[in-house]
Image (cartoon, rainbow, N blue to C red; front, side, top):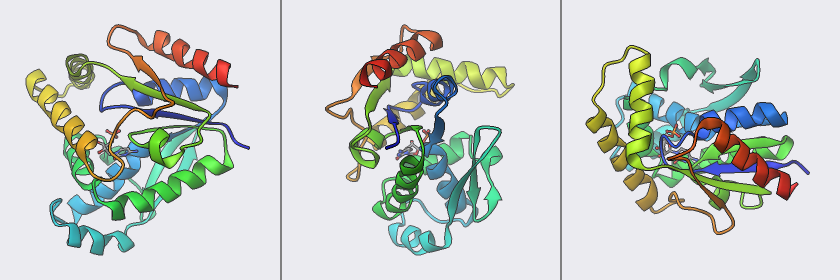
Length: 221
Ligand code: C5P
C-alpha cells in the first residue's frame, strides 16, 4: 500500500515549500492540488465564464481536461494538453480558483484525479480538503497554518523579490477573504481533520517546520 501524507491549511501557510522539501527528503511525489483548481480557474477566465454562474461553470466542466505529469521531479499541470504551470501562479487566477472551487462539479473532477495519483505512489499532497475528504486514510495528516499577518508578509516579500510591486494591506485582505471562502463553503470546507497534527509556522522557519513534520511521519511509519 502506498504511503500518503496530507498537508492542509490556509493560503500562504507555506504548504508547497514544505511539501516539496519533504518530498525530496523522503523520495515521495509531491502533488499540488491547488494548481489543479488554478488550471480550471484559468480555463474559466480564458473563456470569460462568470465565477458566480454555476450553470455556466457546470456546462464548461466536460470541456476541461486536467492532467498531471512530472518533469525533473516538478509537477506540471496540463490543461487540455497545454502546460499551464507558467500562467496560473498569480492573484487573478488564485482568486478565481477560490471562487470556483466551491462548486461540487469542479471538485468532483479533481478529487478523482487526486485519489488516482495517491493510489499508485507514495505522495505528499497539499490542499484544503486532503485529510478530510480526498485521502481520509492518509497515514500522516498535518494542518499547517500561520497568522494572516505572517502569511501576508511572506507573500509580500516573495512578490517584492520578484520585482512585483504590491501592497501589504491588500495582500492581507485578499488572504483573509480567501480563507473565509475556503472555510465557509458547503462542499469540503477547509478545516483541520480530527486526526491531523496542528503545526503553526508563525514563529518557525522552513527547516523547523520540515523537521516537525518529519517527526510526525517517523512516528507514523
Ligand atoms: O493552494 P492554492 O492557493 O494554489 O489554491 C488555490 C485555491 O484552490 C484555494 O484558494 C482553494 O479555494 C482551492 N483549493 C481547494 N482545494 C484544494 C486545493 C485548493 O479548494 N485541495
